[in-house]
Image 1 (tube, rainbow over the protein chains, first blue to last red):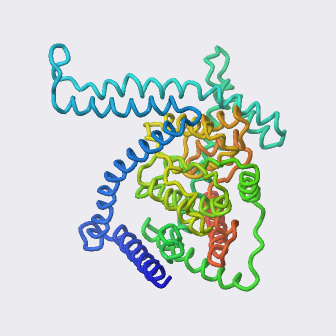
Image 2: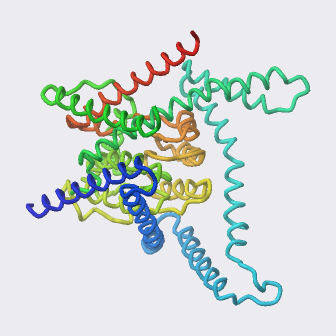
Length: 216
Length: 246
C-alpha cells in the first residue's frame, strides 16, 4: 500500500512537472531553454509512438489470434486479417530487398497494394455514407419530431437539393450557401469553442495532478 | 491580447474558478443540470451486467501526444467509471481505438477498473483492440462495427475524435438493434452523432463527465469554471459585436 502511494506520488509529480515544463516551453520564444526542453519532450513522444505502433500490431495479432482460437463468431475474418497482415509485411520486406525483376524491376509493390485495396475500399465506404446519413435523418424524424429534428432534416434536404445543377436553382443555391456560411459556420465555431474550453478544464485538472489515468 | 496571453488568462481563470468551485461545493455538493447521456450511461452499464451483455466503447482516433490528447484522457476517465460498474461481470467490455499511443491508456483504464473491483481474473488486455487508422478512418469504423457485432454488444459508447466514419458504426448499431451514445470533438462527427445516436454529448459535455459520474469537489469545481468561462466568452462576443456595430 505504501509502495503504491509512493509510486502514485512520483507519477503525479512527474506528470505535473512535465506538463508545466511543456506549457512554459510552448509559450517561450524559439531557441530559449524552456522551448528546447518542450521540443525534447515532444520528440520523446515520436519515439514512443514508433514503439506503440509495434505494440498495436502485436495487439492486433493477439486479438485476432484469440478470436480464431476460441472459434468466436466471425473468426474467418480474423484469419483473413492475419493472412493479410503477414502478406503485407512479407511484401514490404521483399520491396526493401529490391527482389523484383522484369517488368516489376525497381517497383514498390506495397504502396500499389495499398492503393488497390485500402483506398478503393475506403472510397466505396465513403460513397455509402451519404445514404447512411439521409436514412439517419429519416429515422430521426420517425423516432421523435422535435423542432431541432425538423430543422436538421430541413437543412439536410435544402443542402442536398442545393447541389442539384437545376436551370432555375439559383435561389436554392443561395439559400444553401447562406446556410453553410452563416448558421453552420457559427454552430461549428460554437462546438469548437466548447471543446476548447473543455480542453482547458481537463488540462488544468491534469496540471493539478487530479487526473487518474496514470495512477493506481 | 496575443495568443500566449489569452492561453495564460484562460488557464488562470480555469484554475482559480476550479479551486473556488471545489471549496464551495466541498460540503454540500453541487446540483448539476441534467445531461440525458449521463443519465443513460450508468443505466446502460447496469443493463449490460444484468443481461450478461457487453458494451462497445470507442475512442476513435483520439491520440495521446496530439491535439486530441485531452479528449482521449476525458474519454478514458468516463470509460473508467463505467467499466468499474461492468467489472463485476465476466463479460468484459470492448474498447476500440485507432491510435496506437492510446492503446496502453485503454488497456490500463480497463485494468484499473478491474483492480478497483478486485476482479483482475476477468481482465483481458485484448479487450482493448487497436484497428489501424486509414486517412479517413473508415476502415477503422468498419472493423470496430464488425468486432462489436461479433461480440453481440448491446450498446456503443463512442467518445473522443470521430469524423464521418461514425456513420458506419451508427448504421451497424441500427442494424443490430444496439443503443448508441455518441460524442466527437470534430463538428462533422458531432453532426452524425446528433442524427444517429440515441443520446448525444455535445462539445464540452465530454470533459465534465467525471463530475456527473460520481464526482468529487475538484471535478464539480471544473464544471463551475467551465460555466464561468463560457459566460465570459459569450460576453466577449457580444461586446465585440456591439463595438463593431457602434
